Amino acid sequence: MNERRFPSPAPSRAAQPGGEGPDIFKKKSRKSSAKEPSPQPEETSLAAPGAPKKYLKKILRPSAPEATLPVQDTADPLAASSDQVALQPGIKPVLELLERAPSRIDAVFLRKSRRGAETDRILDLCRAGGIRFSLVDEDFLHRLWPGRHQGVIARLYPAGFTDLPSALAAARTAPLPLLLALDQVQDPGNAGALARTLYALGGAGIILPRHNGVYLGGAAAKASAGALEQLAIVKAANLGQALDAACEAGFAIYGASSRQEDALPPTNAFTFSPEFPAVLVLGSEESGLRPGIAKRCSHLLRIPLAGTFDSLGVAQAGAILMGLLAASQRENPN
Image (cartoon, rainbow, N blue to C red; front, side):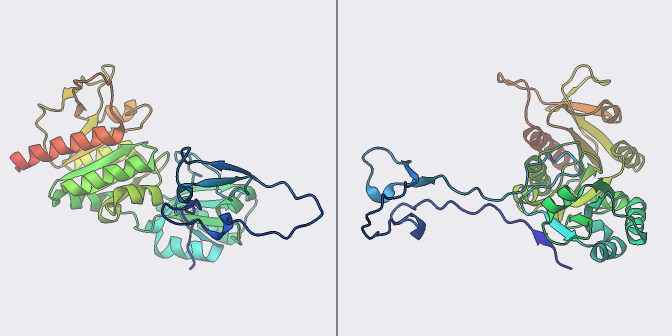
């Protein structure tokens, strides 16, 4: 099966300091002609006045635009980052993945008008395996995969997902018995940075909601510096129910919030004494924890701020809270 990864944008063609630029920028000699010369592209210098000629960086305008994928919202189940998205087109290959390695599939996209025994089988396997699928138009599929796709494309998570019981078992024996739950966090960079911190401190894995969850593609993998491949990643059909299951398994559920309107008054994270194993829940960049998720937490942790800022980004707040939990666990391992 062929998997396609969209390459990162090509490096700039501007001249490098200390040498001449590529051939495309070199002036070519022209033979004299009686005809009036054609107008040349406008030449704009980016260097400061008086800079040596070899340091001039030039832009030729107009230039032909480069073909890129349309920018899409990573919160949308149809979203796909152009940064090394792993895709598998074709009915037979997608069917084989669903039957033999469903944990590698993040989402399946099918053409709306495509109906038949094989596509019905794909839908049945998606429902049985808890894999999200979307019926889309031909134009969307063509933007994902300009070649032949037979009306079916699977978006992959190459490292593979795991189930919740396995993640809970891994957390119990981890150096830091902690799982991270991301309640509709959208930015892949934030997810990757959080994974990097979690793994560095000895945590075990991350729980994501199946719907409105961040896609762990190339951008997240780059920000994680390889940590995502070392962690157990769970895609939960219902995040609230996953937290209930973790609580029943003996895990303490802690949320990050400073809102006074939450059901629980926030607790000072600097003086809090946590219990382990635990799940730390972080809310989305825009609205924080959803009320239905916040009410499942035994404590809501607040980071006291001494400066003039009234909030922190989710990656920064998560890193501080994970560090505090790790310090407390090492001081009181039992």
